[in-house]
Image (cartoon, rainbow, N blue to C red; front, side, top):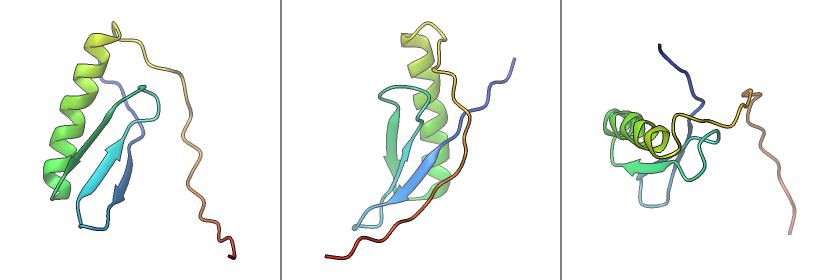
Length: 71
């Protein structure tokens, strides 16, 4: 049975990609390329599911918003 998870991907100031899976507490990884990142995030999800007994917090991805706050 395949399960789907939303993955949030950002890029830090050094150009490294950082991924997190909001439905799995503590599920984060990073890599220099998107291809490596996706392989690593799949591995991280598998490990998180193994540790948590296959449980994931039920969530529905809605979207991402950007806001601007003046200083």
